[in-house]
Length: 573
Image (cartoon, rainbow, N blue to C red; front, side, top):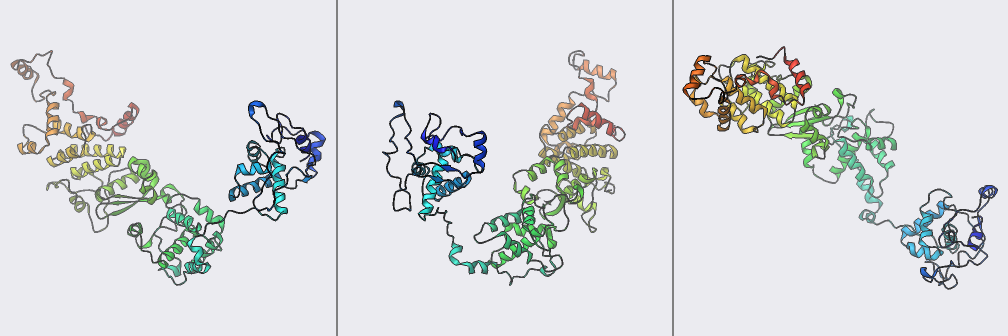
């Protein structure tokens, strides 16, 4: 580089061959001339060794240094700063050569610094710069160039990092060709390009990534292999690198399901599995059961929320009845599904949630509610009906005097069905469904004048915590809804003790509503109860469920106010 000789002839405290620091003294016209000229370094003069202070210790002078030895040369390397050298490589080219040398393991950084006669600070100062001519003022630049020039003149090439040999390499190219020869494998539906797919898009992406890492596999050849899996007019003109990159860049089980890369890669890898004699994985078997004979959807692309956004599969009951639901809708209503399908659980990868201990009858009501916001029941098929389906629930028997059931009239449903629905909504953390269900339960009791039977109380007691709104409602219904004077004694014997205790405590605070005021006062005097001190509170005799918001878990008064307005025309007092 121009003027380097002057800098080397007159080292200063801030700019020396040892430190490689300092500003480039050229400026103005000299700087412009540098751009059009070949950098030259006058190395004919002796370069004085850098001076050191006493407290820095004593260093050997340049003349006292041992001859520089370069691996691969039969003679010591001449002083790289002893000749007039034309620097023909840019700074970046020199840095690349240095990196290749160090990465090859032939020399370490300290050995290289010693070989070119600069300090480690000067070396890193040059190497940490970026750009074609960034670092041309550094002493390491001309010194390193001279080092590599000397090697090249002597016929010594920069070694490259050797690629580790693999077992596949020992088998030779023919083994790879045999591995890819899938012409003898035929899949059902291949002739019409309709092979059922039983892997998700994410599964195929993982297989593609692993396959492209294999020795001898190129993306271009892989694209041609995928194209060969088509046999009809569905065959695309080609599978380009951009198509491959687009598919691999997506995320989600069904993201990219209509891509030609997805279908053809599945067929390709399925043939490879058969060729290698590998059995189907357990997950693969489950996918066949979930998706049926048609396989994964490869035709409907994502176009809208309620039409073709990501779908998830729910397997309910011991027989794994299949429900396919839009994931955004499901996750927006249920915190349970939101955590399962968007977290780090297996369900988020497969898009499948198993609820084998959940009744398909109840979950069908949940799915219907998700889409239309109403608690109604739809049968699974034409051969089933609501009576048969509800009779299959294990919670309680259906009284024979129950009126004929209507799909949309929850007052005709057995009480245990509504209680079971509430418990399921609580488990799936669907707040609004809990609110709708407990309102439906209250409405059914009010319209039919028939309360909860003992087995329903048992169901509530064994599945709720002390602070559960459903449990509070059940206790209040027992306190205010049952005619205690006419209740069958066997009924009370079947009520769980905890609920009975809660009911008795609530009853102790009630006024005897069947007594007139005079009789009530006489009773208090007879029992020596002070009217002013121990008088029970009159407000306790108001039915709590006259305002169902008590059981609704509202976040604030505004939400409670809106709920009351919504129910004002339908709630039964």
